[in-house]
Length: 426
Image (cartoon, rainbow, N blue to C red; front, side, top):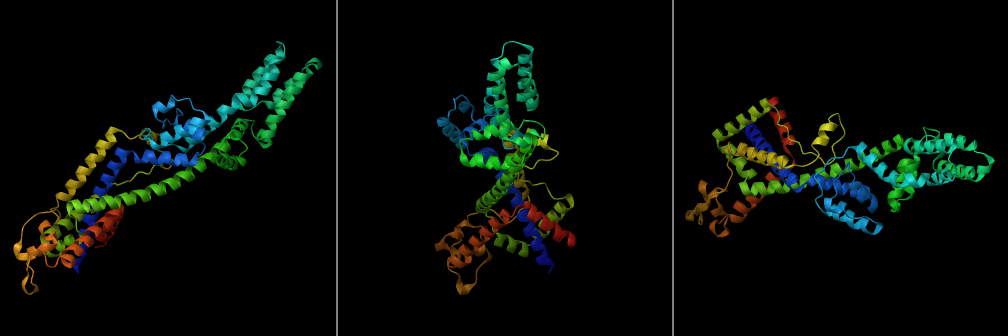
């Protein structure tokens, strides 16, 4: 029973080391190809389905995902789709993290920027018809304040009421403009002013019907701009949660492929390694001792960072590390080298060799020499060189390599947790 337990501990420890190697290779590939940034951009494209909004969002100074050459293109309704599509297909910047509050502020800025002047244009036009006076100056100040703070429509109405009868047409135009503003969202005016009005007017100008309807649902329950932005943050977080789950599944698939490639390249055959651990006490004890040392030192930190980290107290630090740099690539390459070295130092029964063994071609009375059953010998993998090839070599090798790939795809945290449970319980 003790031998079986040691073989199990040894295999689990070996799987954990190969999982670390696969994770390091995975991280290297992700940094080289900027997978997190590409995944985030794809998620944003799915969230912001209006081409003009997409283009404005990606090139916004707080985001800067769009390619520099695309920023110089004058974007019209006809060219917005092409510009946004080109940015989506390209690598873009290295931005792989956007804080929810930044998303909400940028989207609000885009929607309100177009509406701000147009929304208050009737008021401004009406006031410009007045002759120079204290009334005119006061109205201009109040309108400017309403544009920037969203508060002051009632003050503008009260000031317009003081206009003389000779200015009745101007007064009527001002009252009509105020009524149109108030009709956009009456509840907003009773909960802290009209800062929400430019956003609501900006929604009406969105060309994509589905995106406009989604935003209306999000903003419908908001009575203030802060509430609307909070709803946008929740919307963004929900989408990023879905994106993160999809990214993790994608990373798992990649890990399986990487595990398969590593198992083939290093000849990490689970069946052969298990047999070697069973038959070689020295190897078994060395691997178990290394496993015990690892448990005593603590589980190494192995983290696959999702494209949309949750907002936490370390948000500022996360933003600083939001872009993939050359240092990230170098660090991940160093991690691959270290993980590979940890595996090689154990002198595991892995790797390939080539030795011609003509005596293995014909095996008398079913008795096979130990060397004729060495699954590391490439020569034995030739069907003509082994009478027991299909069942004795090919099937075992295929199963052993596949088991290693599946094990690696489970991830290092899974194996280290299992290793801790077994070793500490013992």
